[in-house]
Length: 270
Image 1 (tube, rainbow, N blue to C red):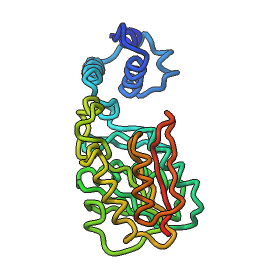
Image 2: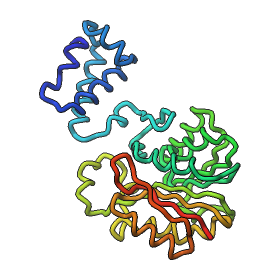
Image 3: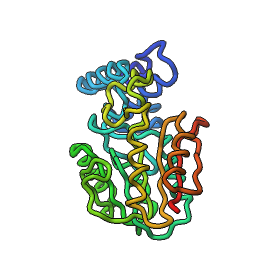
Image 4: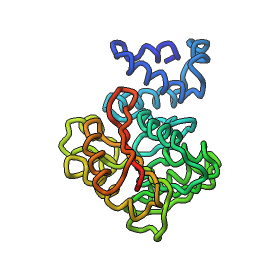
């Protein structure tokens, strides 16, 4: 099989499937899209052909491309991804943009449920003087985040294994951010996410249980005038606003993602 044959392998596949197969081929050959155009007659090695066909089968079974290639771009970073982590989504960059737009100086920040470290590391890369603590409940996941921090030289980011606030030493932060599990366990969308860790996706109480816990406890961990910024489901914006207001946050508002869905809600502690 040569490059041209590989590019045509999926036949009637839709445009996104074709794009994913192109990205897979780029990864296996270690070249860019432009370079591929000049290598159409290049033959794949037996190993490359085997990995390519295996990768296509995994894609057909709804496995994310990032699990096949082992990495995912997020913000300006290329992050290691494993089956112990969620694949960072572009919509989560909305949370990063929102935080960067806040009137903050050199602050202390807590990222709850860091996963690959996407949010914490993106913000640390933009604000190198911030003191950043990133947590996750699962040690293998935390190890991936630590690897990504080392890979990008973000040594100011510290890590702790903790179920939300439970294992942290008493302290106060200027900012708390989180992309917690927020999908209802019976949501139909989960059928397309079966290969990703369900513990990082689903939450009881119609997807709001973890969000409620974070909001309820955050006032004990925030300095006066500190900010809480949360990612949530497309239909949870008004509920999250109400929860923030109830426990004493002001300047509460919801930001939409690139698809015009409610995605990030924030508030400032009075």
